[in-house]
Image (cartoon, rainbow, N blue to C red; front, side):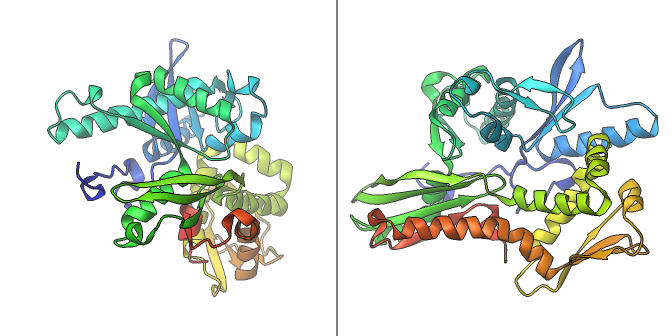
Length: 366
């Protein structure tokens, strides 16, 4: 390939949400129990769709979903729960119900194995012969993950069938910076030797921040890191968490925890509807509406109207005021503004000319 214009993008969207070009691949994977072992069933949106469908079907028949194990949004659980080098050697993660635990190495390697198979299949469809031996696989990781996590990812790649000599790791904000520069027609020419730029990458779980200085830009752009990578566990899932806390306050924390454990499919649907609200919300929005269904709708007290949230028990939706939505967003906004201000005021960043922002949070109109 001669340029990034010739790169084929694989959105990875299947099932219920196929065709949404603005979506990225969901970090979700579904396994089926077969003879005491977990067998890969589906990945991404397809996994979520399959699990929701199975959950509804089993509930109607009066049985449970013990024959399936579903993991979703587990990347941040690795960051939060592993606080030592030893912890990265054999970390354990829980499924969405909290009832099943599995080695993270197995779960992550199965995700990589799936994406590897999709990429190889796509290349073969494009006419590439024997692609497995021609690919340099680049796995991106959050910048705030500690060094032991890098060894973990390399082991996961090896377990997924990628030879050690064909894999490299890249920090997510660095990959984002490359994308921003390449997507701009003139920016790569404007970045002169000595130019500095700050990169903020805020997606679902993490805020990753790093800074570069251009050291060469003749035939190839070369940069060096001038600020130690930092950030924190701040992303759009923390807005989701704030929303769930509001639900807990309305129906009671213990009832909400029990509902989440017994109805993971309903929680998934609820968060999907709230996701639509997040995407449409602006600083001029007066309110957002989140539809409720089934058992959860029945748990909300009729006529509830407190703290900027009211329940319409005829239309079965929560109306969230613009002020309350803004308060949920501010959890991320304050952290982002504080981090960016601190970085730009540092002596190393004096004369910084560019700030690149990437990730789902920065696509929000708010």
